[in-house]
Each structure stands twice: as C-alpha cells, then as structure tokens.
Length: 111
Picture 1: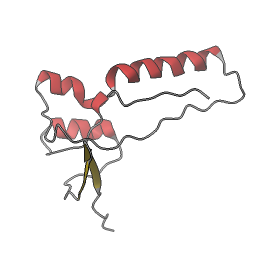
Picture 2: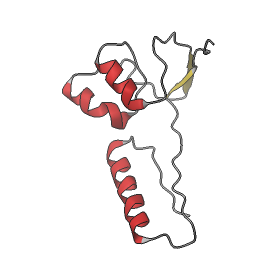
Picture 3: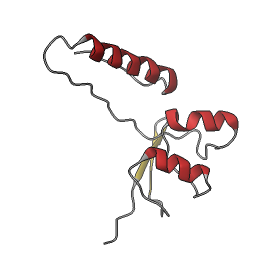
Picture 4: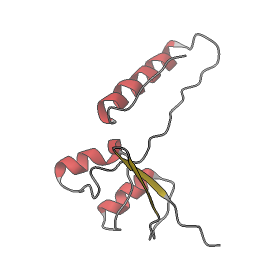
C-alpha cells in the first residue's frame, strides 16, 4: 500500500504556504527522524527542542529559518480536581522545560 505524500503547512509573518514534499522516509518517531537527518537522509521536519542543540553545534542547518509550522497542543489530564504532588511536579517540570526550549508562542493554561 502506498502512503500519500504529507502536506506541510508553513507560515511566515502573515503569509502561508503549502508544501508537498517527496519524502524518502516517513516515520512517526521524531527521534528516529532526528537520527536519520543527522545521518544524511536529507531534509527533515524536526521540533525545535529536538534540533536546537545540533543547530547551535553546526551539525544541522535550518533550511527555511523564517518559516514555521503551526504548533499543536499538549494536554496534561489528571483524575480529580487535585492531582497528586508527583503529577503536579511532573507537569511543572514539563512546563518549565518547554518554556526554555520551545519558541515564545507557547502558552500554558491551567484549568
């Protein structure tokens, strides 16, 4: 069975573009994609928090630095109104780590 080519929506300022790449590798594991791109498989779409250290080190180079993919959402769901302290500590650690490594459009909302 042949998979359809992914479509990538990119945004830059007020502009948007739809890119239809012809991938050599399709995967659902960002760490595998990271290793493949580092090994020379070609261009790849990697989250900032995965690629940033390699970009700083010069091992990876941003190809379209002014363009971004719209971001998704992360939900931390717990049972009950008062989650256990371990869950609160984990949630807060994820928020802190994400805020330090993901671009400035990340917003966290506690409900």
